[in-house]
Image (tube, rainbow, N blue to C red; front, side, top):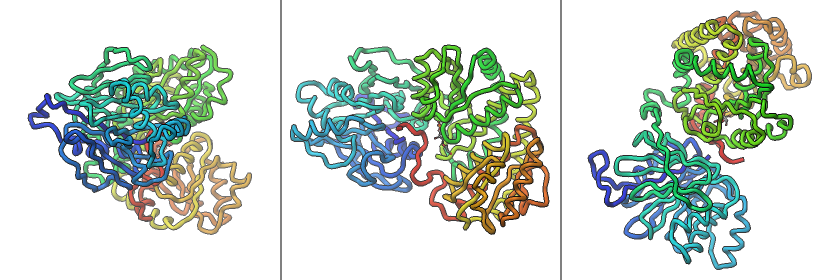
Length: 597
Ligand code: F6R
């Protein structure tokens, strides 16, 4: 949540890719564009220019905007997802102190900001925004009265309560300083320059060599990179990592939106799991086998993948695996013991509602086997065992390929546990093939026609049984967040317990009807909906008279959940286009990577 980007090329470090260094504003602007999926209600950049801070702030998305700041070798920027204070220019970051010499960008929530604000107001500081962030530059200003820049930033950060990451620069210092506790930060090491960003997608264009800043660490970027611990400031040796993401992977290429690009990447993602993950997944299967009690955790889309995991392990491996939404796990973990295995699943590896409960159960001695897409993310570093989804960067705020990669990893692990690894691999390869045939023009046109027909609906209902139930709720989430149509997903039988009251003539109802033990009963549920006027869209390998529209999948057993959800992703996308949604990659009010509670 919120994207941070800082850049410094020290005046003595003259060359950048053989060219003159020094257009911090341009580099930061470009970096913020790449980080915009973390928050996009307002943005701003501050650079140091001739011994003073010059800044520019705007409400709205970066989009096609331009930046008009002077050339500089040092600066910081921010793209915001509002927490404290509305979406206004005054509330956009960077924030300044009273002298205008200290600029701060921030990700997180300063929980004690009101106390700090009262204290600083009593000392005569003037505030111009409603944000919690603004206390930070004023506090630094206070500390600077008696100490140097680095210790002033350190002492300030030590006074902040909550989970925060800050990046600070000052008109009187040739450095950028960043500190973190909770919210992510990564420093990039270029040839003659340094970068600091909320995540590596912001800097992979410039360098693949990075240092992940750990909680309670502060980094000073100047002539060199100096890493110190908090609260005391003892210097420690940085650990360098190489990111293997290619810059091209972070671009849209021929696609109009990342959402569509990432949908089309899914066959490759599935094949990648089959080709490259078997060794890892055998290890994961071994951990599950020997654990006494296993929990799958996730939030949003990842939680639906986790829920699907419980069905997969039950059905295939005859294993009972518990499941919890990340934010609820704190209230459910009283019986966790050192023999419990907790498997948090998170695309970003930064979601606070996962990271925090994992920290809690780690204190109880539970083993953590994290499944994430981001090397070096907080969850990745936190875990005892680390499993990478390897789906490549996901830039659309709404997850697509992350979901299918999570499902593939869980499905193959369940098959391995059942002693039928080859069957699992075959199914995933068949799912990849099924997706490729779904992407043929004729089929896409059918989805577009369907989207046109139902795009003015106010409500939609989706039902599935067994493994198709998590598919239905994930499908629902995609439709809601991308097209803004109200959609609800239910277990097939639940309708008669109340929801069926909402069905009217023409209400679109999507029925997940795979060729499995749920088929007959879900078709009966479809009949019940049709009898009340529902417009029935069936997704499965067999057509049925009850369907008004049939979207065909192959019969690929448990892997059918993959084409089921991909149909919903495509439908959500074309519904969004039909309804004129401004940017399906950045749905209103959302942000990728939810790092605040
Ligand atoms: C919805 C979506 C979100 C995320 C959720 C967890 O399309 O993407 O619901 O799944 O915020 O994010 P991660 O997986 O990064 O923990």
